[in-house]
Image (cartoon, rainbow over all chains, first blue to last red; front, side):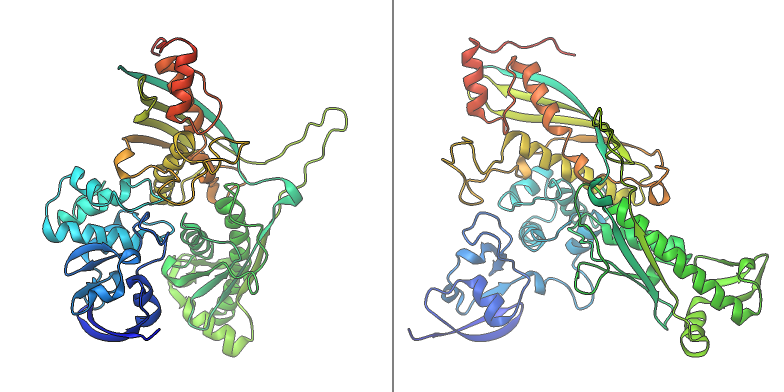
Length: 159
Length: 340
């Protein structure tokens, strides 16, 4: 089958790749662009670790056909830091021990960023709602919820 | 429909590591000419923080800043042998091996420093900030970096150490079978409070309160992280997850994350944890380790809480709404037990 040319913005940089029909965005990002920050968890939208922002909205990249992002802006965990400085959410995750094995962390951070971008001062219930599509095996969620709340309050609050 | 509250308690006496084959782990420590140290291990950090803890143990034993120690783990081709990361053994077994290796490396480092300062090694001490000086005379000092350079390029010495921790094999009494399967035990007690819906059989966690005695907590935040997260793995085993819900019949098993149930962020409840530190005589700096124990007491405590709430005793995990409902029906309705 002929490959399709595809152009989109990846963390603010224009990229052009050729994809097979039916390629999902996760595969395009990891295998064709080399951005390994979105993880492959279940491949069917059940775990959330492949989460990315498309035009600022949270999407599961494993369930998104790559061709649908043509001309759009895709943001992954790789793009949220500011040069050598971690994003406030990344800093808060580290300070609050919100990662253990780390496999869910990219998806948790993107879900949290999507929340804080539209609601900078969320309640605890809103944080829980925002990460409810993401599965974590290690942390018991509590440190993740606390990290998001801490990032929202400027990184000062703890637990 | 009524929702019944119930409270259950469970305690554990948990052996650290196992006795099989002496349960050994090895560690190698060496300095680089930069004065930084590398710890080589085959032990794996699964996210529980073993890399951080062995780094602390090595730095403390060597008497150097923790920033000067790098831990290289999880390559069994190049690292010294380790039994593995399981049985709550990492901090205790691997930590002891790292401590032994660091102690030997420290001996060589102090000898090399003594040669440079022209004093007796027994008269030297480390300041924990990267310097070695004569006791009582801090101005007669040399940095660990300069010692490492001197050892490498002048003295022809490797500042290195080997460490192993091996539990003495316990003899088995041929008459009674009695033996001592472990040298070190941690302890915990957990109280679970649940709410059981007698119409749907659903069990909600209301709160947990626990106390853990796990030797000295070498890194209190890592211990807390283990206890908070591990409790939810326990809840998950108690109430949700199984690959074979109708065991031994292999039917209706989950096929993916949607069907394989685990708690989500909306299912969690407050958990108040007290950590009691009673240093273990044979642990590195008195540590035992939280490990598996952070999940274990949750299962019986939840089962007991369900009995306390509706009077049904379910001894088959996970305690699904179906099992709770069938048991309530079999006894002719919920029978809340006296609240303790």
